[in-house]
Image (cartoon, rainbow, N blue to C red):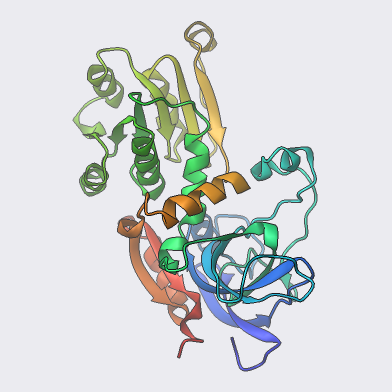
Length: 355
């Protein structure tokens, strides 16, 4: 925190391809909330698009949503079992808690009205500031000796967990993961934990080999031949029970329908840029009973399960930490995150206050 108790330091995207460290108002925890001192925030694809000027955001903007920290303050009128110093992760992307989706636990599909996060006049998601105040229901504990850089992976892991759970996978099923970026890698790990045979389609040999080293069973090089034909050959001509497409190109996602066996499912993970239409053969969907679905953001339930996977050591995201930067090197961190050879770049938000 800065010397003024009423302000704090924050990483702000101040313009296209430009960040700045700014003093912004320090939030005050209200009744029912806790104040969290943020330790680490990862740079996600969304933050990369904001930084590159491709997200359509009004700048300046205070980004960050894949983050971890410790409980700093608990107001006397906040009822909670948390204690000051507890290590936690949290949901910075809010939901209202009282729409039909939230009532059913589908908080990622919230259709209600919730409080916008601002610091003075600065719009924010808030993960790249020194402190954040959140309702207790949006804060989740992690193992108290868990590395907080590792803990920051709870949000992206929860996103992939939500995607995996869009399909009923059974032990012994075969699944195809399209793309071996970080989200494809996490999908492959989760599918393996579900007892599935995992085929990963990835043109980059380094990423393909990493997937194999982390438990994927087969790495498919699309440059070596039609990946649909390769998948068909590996499954005796039948196809796979599920395809998880983690790439951003509609044409690639559309081609993967040919990998499915009858009654198979295609999950479109992530958003598409550009958002080109995908042609559909309605008779194929009808006769073969394909399921084509999407996956968007995690629910609170997914987030909770992700914290357990990390805390219990069932998923280790350490191989995906490409580089860690101190807060004052945020500009370098964002530029590094744009390189195609990176998975996740981490910013230590507490680097200035640890001096």
